[in-house]
Image 1 (cartoon, rainbow, N blue to C red):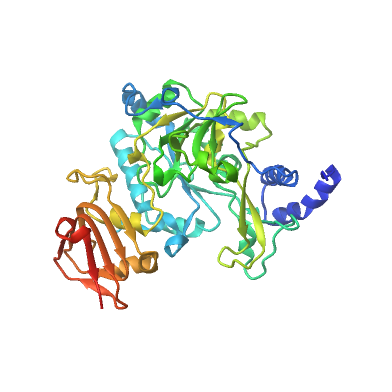
Image 2 (cartoon, one colour):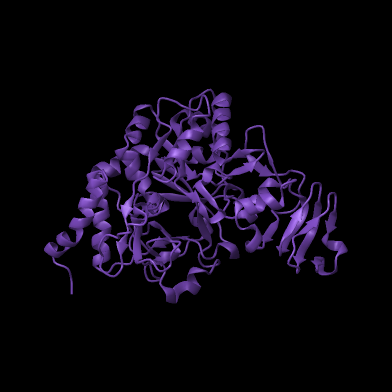
Length: 483
């Protein structure tokens, strides 16, 4: 039975009061109400095959094949800002603070490297390009302390603003979730789609425009490939685009992630996340030949276009709903089932008329999701340039190594550090490394080719200092340790 307007008001009243007590602006409450009403009406945010079509290569630009627009891009740098999404914790790797504070290269963390990149950019191009972080209520304090240690990064534009939070919704009753054991778990960040309203309500959007800055490059703080690119900036400025999404070719490893498509209804581009795919269409969703591009979450937005859209829509930007089923305490599966209402930043591609996408090489998408990724970065497979970009070692002729570490012994950052305390093996000639069991490495170890190390014993095995392990010298590339 459909809810009446009165019934909707009654259902939403506890949420409105809770959000008002938390000091959330009315625009955030109104936006949350929009999504809450959609949930009450049974909307799931699903996009089916009937709603979308695939994208052919000729339909979008290709960074590797386009005209050189880098000179134009360089001339626009004084009108550009860098914004990093910094709301995530490194909990999956055992880090109970901002993931951007995870050490990745030469004693520096993501934030250190980003700050040094921006400072070097300012020095080279004689401008004051702002660096701005969107923090969450979980990362703000740690990040602000870390930023305070970087002299010279501040400009007249604030270095950070806060992402909002929204209440979790009990699945059974559609009432606000209550969790007295930890009240913070009654809330969730509403996804990075929140950035547009947060920019507006924080006043930073206005400050940027008043300073003559109209182009914003937005990316995840843990994506080392997401650096300012004058070629893309040149294309963005030349075509006067309101919104541009960097996409890359999907591989089998990306098949469960979101993909780019085109809405049949109006011909606009659309981002479909896995949570928006019906279960019965999972096969088509994962078909990388049908849906060949994924969103790197590197986004370029024209701030004037954003401001105009907000003005025309009561200061709101209504993105497709992502209904995310969870438990109230993600670490306690017996806690009440809830819905987290979320939106994706990239989903705005379907909101702006004239929004476009550009195919970029995989080098612009280098996130760190688990300790496997981190070990590769720590190794000599990657080096830091004078501009503080972390790139594949020019001496390496192979693609990035495929690393699989036993999650029982290497899942958490402290476990990884303990087993590589004397240094990471040289992996510059390593194609793949697969470790099963508890294995520790002393200094100066070299690994080449395709190698699988298996410790069947119950005791930790230590690879001695200076050992060279070459897959070509092992039967099947396998090194087995027994008790």
